[in-house]
Amino acid sequence: MSLEDKVGQLFVMHVYGHTATDPDQADVDTNLKELGVRDAAELIARYRLGGVIYFGWAHNTRSPHQIAELSEGIQKASPTIPVLISVDQEHGAVARIGAPATLLPGAMALGASGSHEHAREAARIAGTELRALGIRQDHAPDADVNVDPANPVIGIRSFGADPDAVAGFVTAQIEGYRSAGIASAAKHFPGHGDTTDDSHTELPHIHHTREEWDRYDAPPFRAAIAAGVDSVMTAHIVVPALDPSGDPATLSHPILTGILREELGYDGVISTDSLAMRGVRTKYGDDRVAVLALKAGADQLLNPPRPDIAWHAVIEAVRNGELTEERIDASVLRVLRMKARVGLLDQVLEGAPGAPAPHAPTPALSVDATVGTPAHLVAADHIADATTTLLVNTDALLPLSPATHPRVLVVGADPRSPSGTTGPPTTVLAGALNSLGFQAVALPTGTAPDEAAIEKAVADAQGRDAVLVATYNITTHTTTKDNTQAANTALDQTPGPHARAHRATDPGDDTATGQTRLVTALKATGLPVIALAIRNPYDVAHLPPVDAALASYCWTDVELRAAARVIAGRTVPQGRLPVPVRRADDPAQVLYPIGHGLTY
Image 1 (tube, helix red, strand yellow):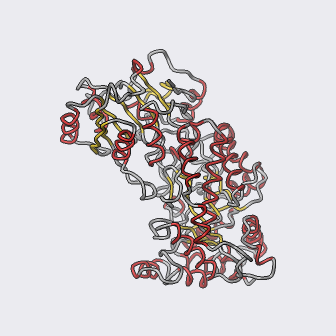
Image 2 (cartoon, one colour):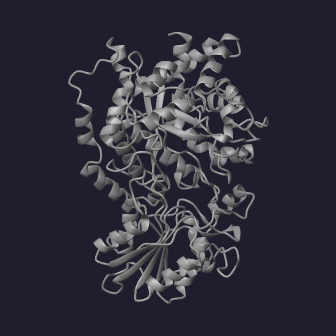
Image 3 (cartoon, rainbow, N blue to C red):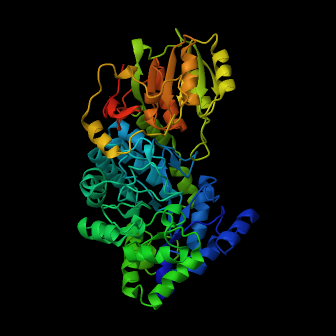
């Protein structure tokens, strides 16, 4: 391999278009503007790419058959060393590929199920379908411990707030992906769970001590390494206790080499998070970031915003001696080993690069036999049934019966579908209830309902028997600056006998959100009000006392249908909180601890 070939193996890029050689003209124009090429085939040829990552916004994931054909075209464009095609398909809040592929509960929902077997099976199903689409790596599972309820970037992408519990679920999912022949990636090292900043737009600082890092952040990554994870993805965060230089972890030799490689003993692939994110570009220019990431210990460079600059910068760093070719070789070897583990090099090693395997099924047959099968969809519903968590059930309102409460008004937020193929939530909830014998009507009121929307909801509630409110991150504000201290308390504390009566925000206060005012106004009608948190489960702490409160941990159809079945009593609530719900006015006090969950 030439130096250029080796460097190319370290780059993982996105490219616009639904095919490798004939994308829509708008995608050609965007590729030329952003990447300097027309299509995926040109991108691979120019940079000798080792990897391609798919995104919905890049128009890579229109349908299963289209994805499989795109994957086949990408491999044809790289006749010597196959391309590792990857995707962020965590499920739940992060899903690049939508229906008719199987959509499964996400990490926090799986954490609420308490079942490693469900987590393992979800990863196996996800991986099996990805492999049929020509994708051999999933940038999952998320190994972050969600300490801060106001975390804007992790939240329900985490399995929970207990480090040991998160470690168990991370291990289970790695095992599930491996059983499907898919490479997994634990992220975001050294831990992105305790921040109110989003590294997509700024550079977060994590103020854990080294001892706190060992207790909270390290266990899931230690478990991932012990389970043989294929890749560890870095975080664009500053952790002064681990590296006082102010460099983000992605560019930190003390963190990636000193801790991850030498202290934790990890010798697999280290991948950066996207190098287009603001968090890694605040201190250094695009011509330095890729070189510094490799010097820090990274092997794969994900999505540099200006690939021509990054690629040439790495080559020049080798030629001028800043990087040695031996250092590049070490990373190339790790990448090739990962490709070999998922079967990409089988034909190369057999001496027939690029040739189809004998009697291999065509992509169409593989897709039809694997993706979105009835068995997978049934399994997704079965897993989801174990996740819905019942937090409050005053006077045993639930399960709701169509005989006593037939007419239900469903109001609330309709956030955009993660995959673009599900929802809207209020419509899905109303439809699910109607299929269970209710007469439900949906009225979307948004994430910030104004007075007109609230008045409309109150008016429409007249003549109804109950109201279901879908809440969505009522607030991401946190009043504690030391979330770790609060988490120490939360892991140990049980709620007081009157925890249900506490609320974070007085609805008469100016700080009350539109969603809080909506619930308050609906409660004033005298109708039973059921609150369903369709993203983070912390919403109940920001509401006035409601008759029933549940958490579904996501707003995709599979979770919402499961919540409707619980509300109607078709299934019993089985979920248990994987995070503590704290009082928002006093976060050291816990309303509902880890493990809380009612049943019928």
